[in-house]
Length: 347
Ligand SMILES: NC(=O)c1ccc[n+]([C@@H]2O[C@H](COP(=O)([O-])OP(=O)(O)OC[C@H]3O[C@@H](n4cnc5c(N)ncnc54)[C@H](OP(=O)(O)O)[C@@H]3O)[C@@H](O)[C@H]2O)c1
Image (cartoon, rainbow, N blue to C red; front, side, top):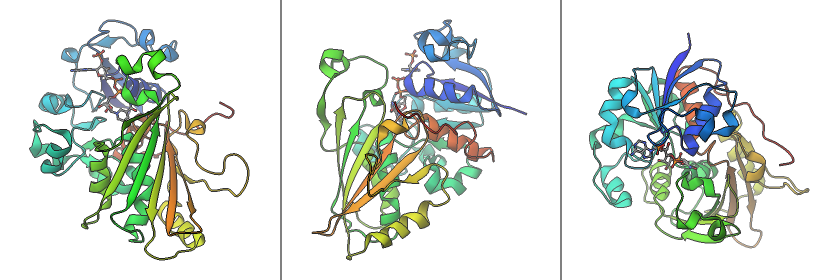
């Protein structure tokens, strides 16, 4: 029997991507998709790539009927205010927003600058990176999908922190992101003459995703992560360049082994480190529409610095793809179901 799902906030970019994936998932029936701005309109009017793939029309969230699982693709600070209504509609929820990612209420208030509407629920949600929380996901009813910058950064660095081989206070991460990370609402900065061609440092410090990185990589220790984000001229994709400092002078072969041990059996992580060619390190362009996270590294010969390079499609492994991967785990399905697309080349 198919799992009946509905998507709340389906007119947005992550909701649209989820719908694209779910419509072709053999074990899923998409029941309803919501939009307040486009209620009554055919889905393909907003997501023209889905023309002839579905006859669904958007409904208002007020018209939602009970289903097996709800995907919430809403702006920050929306899910938490209506979570009790959503829980009445579905026994399982996957939320793509940041509302339930942090476990520590103080950290939430510090990074998000406001009170949480349902702090008691923070611990009911499993943090949504399958490579870190697969076993919890198998039993979970509520999953909070991880932030896109956090996903690329954490997957790139997690094995190093877990093995305790890096200095704990000197990690510097610079992420370059495409415009779709900001969602589909227009603003002054997204106006084409202003956005096209930019290399715009939009969050040099205090990016909220830093809190997720600290939560997932501290292992009970005091750590510091220095994170900056730059908007570049790209629609999809995200490249994290992470500078860490090794405690000991490890050889690259030993670092390979650490990554191999961590990720050899992971279906969506690929280690990309070639000695020649133009694709020696991860490149987001090749990941468009895929659920892969490509990770590469290079040790500085003259210092103890290790540069880890991690790339994803922000709307896929950074959002909809990762949410579907978590869904597959929740329902005991093959994790790759609906996500087997290898990407395009050239693109
Ligand atoms: N974009 C990314 O790369 C990315 C990656 C990871 C996580 N996320 C997170 O995923 C969530 C969705 O992001 P997105 O990029 O898809 O945003 P988006 O393109 O702006 O879409 C937001 C959706 O929410 C609906 N909506 C807006 N306000 C609402 C409200 N008050 N009540 C109900 N529905 C409302 C909008 O539709 P209507 O106006 O038609 O109702 C739209 O369908 C955000 O929390 C974001 O932080 C985004």
